[in-house]
Length: 278
Length: 129
Image 1 (tube, rainbow over the protein chains, first blue to last red):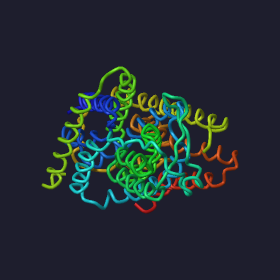
Image 2 (image 1 turned 60 degrees about the vertical axis):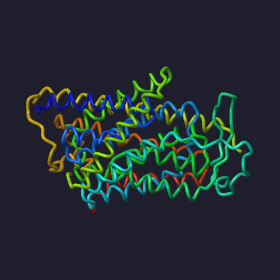
Image 3 (image 1 turned 60 degrees about the horizontal axis):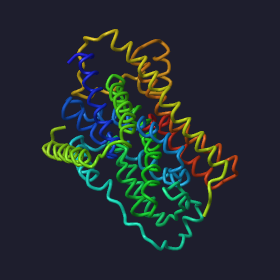
Image 4 (image 1 turned 90 degrees about the vertical axis):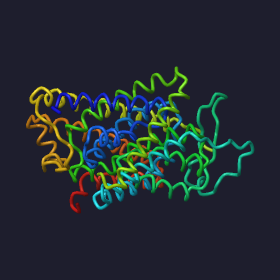
């Protein structure tokens, strides 16, 4: 393939991935690495580098909107970023040590997992537990705008959340993904933070986490401008379009279809990885 | 329970604008490089099947900056990507400033820790690669 063809096709693929990722809330980043490696035959390390860069673009782009609306909790985000950035740094160093086929297998499993987990919401308890002393000390309890005005919430299980965040960061650095699904699990399920606050704060954290491994990727030569350019521009435009359409459409069926695609890509990554095809 | 005060709202709107500006600027620089890159050798063959790593001038911050200002298309695209990577770092830095103004020492410490990890990754990690 020549430069024009390759750039155009990768740009289009990334645009669709970013669009569907934003529209369904599953994130476009997760399908980028399988898209580049399985369809465009890109080496896994270049694919991981390009994917990570585009993760920063979508996170920063959409976080800008959410921060302004007052959904994300900057203190929770900043505290947990200690765990995610250290994890990401470790993950990025491990990427060079772990064989490519093992990386692909892990990515496949993460893909399948994220398709199932990301929108499972926790039932809201009617009588709130008393505030957690550690969370109170860390000034994490906050408020957010709800349909019925400003709602306040308390945060729990900070050490568990911190631990899961370290793992989420390590996976992000290892695989060049945002690992938003795992971040939301840590905040929504473990720390009992309201779902809307969890997802937006997670989005806000993804960019910082990714930046922590980006430096390592850069010095390793994983970030190729010729490849990262169409991926980043495609995903960015696609996800901006997806966020615009999001409010107007019923996305239930689309979510189901896109989840199925993610599971299939995940299975393909696992099988090809286990056969040593990377 | 804490309510949002004026400082915090200011911080949030500052962060939102910073993130947006960083993304727009980096996309613009990447696009400028892309126009040159596609214009100069559109029919060259591309092959990413095997990993070769990048040349040294595309692997360090100062190398990328120098390469970009020499007018190289790949260097300019890489500079745009570097600006993108710098956006969350600038975001963390601005939070540090606000926590310092608010005299919130605990969160200032947390923020500086995160900032140290980010700067190490970008400027120091090549030392042990």
